[in-house]
Structure formats: C-alpha cells, structure tokens
Image 1 (tube, rainbow, N blue to C red):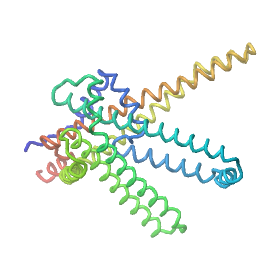
Image 2 (image 1 turned 90 degrees about the vertical axis):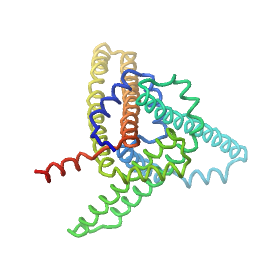
Image 3 (image 1 turned 135 degrees about the horizontal axis):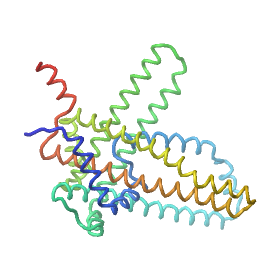
Length: 322
C-alpha cells in the first residue's frame, strides 16, 4: 500500500475544480440550506445556531399562543393547522433539495477526481435521488449526535458554578473529550457519505466502512479537520473584511442623501447594502461549501484507494530516524 501526504494537493484540486466549474456553487448554496458543512466548522456553526435559537425559543410567548388557541374561534385553529402544514411542506422540499444538492456535489467531485471530468449537472441531479434516504439518514444522525454533544457541553458549564482549579480542569478535559467525539462523528459520517454514494453501500454498511476508514486514518482525519477549521476561520475573517468594505458605497450614498435631504437616496443605500451583503454571503457560502466537499472527497478517494500517511506520524518517523 502506498502512502502519500496529500493535503496541499487536496486543496489545490478542490479549488481548481470549484473555480473552473462555478455551476457547482449552486449545489453548494442549496446544500447549505439543511445539510451541515463537512468537518468541525459545521459543529461550531451548529453550536452557535443552537445557542441563538434556544435563547429565541425560551423568550417565545408560548402561554399566549396556547391561550389564544383555547379562546379563539375554531376556524382560527383550522387556519393555523393549514399554515403549519404548508410550513412543513416547504421544509420537506428544502430538505429534499439540500440533500440532493449535497449528494450531487459528492458525485461530481468524485467523478472529476477519477476521470478528470464530470457529468452534466442535470444528470447528476437525477442520479442523486436514489441516495436521498441514505445521505439524509447519515446527516440526521450526525445532527442528533452533535446536538447531544452541544447539550452536554452547555450543561456542564451551567452545572459547575464554582471556579476553582479542579473544576476548570474538569471542564477543559470534558470539552476536549467532546471535541474528539465530534471529530470522530464528523469524519465517520463524511466517509460514510462517500461509501454510500461512490460504492453504493447501504446505510449501516457505509457507516461501518466509514468507521473502519476513520480508525485506520485517525491522525489524518484530525489533521484534515484542523486544516479545514483554519480555512473556516480564514473565510470568516475574509467575509468580515468584505462586508465592511461593502458598506463604503452605501456610506457615500448616505452622505449624499443627508447632503441633498433625499429620502430616495437613503432608502436606495439601505437596499443596496442589504443586497450586496446578501449576494456576497450567498456566493462565498456556495463556493466554500463546494470547496469543502471537494477537499474532503479528494482525501476520501485517496484513503479509499491508496491510503494517506499522517504528517504528524511522518514527523515522528523523521525524528526517531535521526
């Protein structure tokens, strides 16, 4: 078995693929509607999202809603049921589109790495249907486990009120354990998605093979996750800078609106700012989601067919050979 460290090649190939095939950005945008981004970046995003949503839910006037339903006309209740059914239908459509888009990304990237070409996007979309339930099941399982990990971590911080040395050490060790669990779950489900699509394995078979691949490449999975997490941070910094710069034209328009006392210019500058930021975030998110998937799938193909040796392991071998 031949081993080669391929992180630079993975980033290079993924960037080249996604940049030359900008239509893949559409799949990246749609996939992000429900499916979490691959790797630890998805965990941090879910962590922040769950925390924000939990605060919103806790302040939601549930008692007022129930009182309104109890004392209102039955027709209002029927209307509410119809409204909820419409919302659920839209949610189901969003899930379907998102899962099929993520599957299409996996198919396209793996085809490109094997044949240096990929199918038409419409053909890939139709291929993705038969993998829908497997990819959805893998992603839902990942979400459930990561949500439990988030709840456990947050619970520890709330339960331990003292701030002595041993409590702090316990919290740090607990967080490290949870982080490694998240690393394992994220990597296994990524590899399982590859097996489910590329080798057409069933749900449990893909998870079993994903676990075995993770076990054989534990250090590599850890290194890739840290590498992609750094890329997440770089993207976040880049987007923050771009968003700040995007306010420059709007600021000029605000100044002109104040100078000429024009309500039209003021409204136009606000709309321009919102549209600019939205377009930038959507495009960057679509590109990065496709790039992220391309990187992981390139390394999955290398592990699957050849194997990759850890750079940390390679460093230790060099040290002990001296």
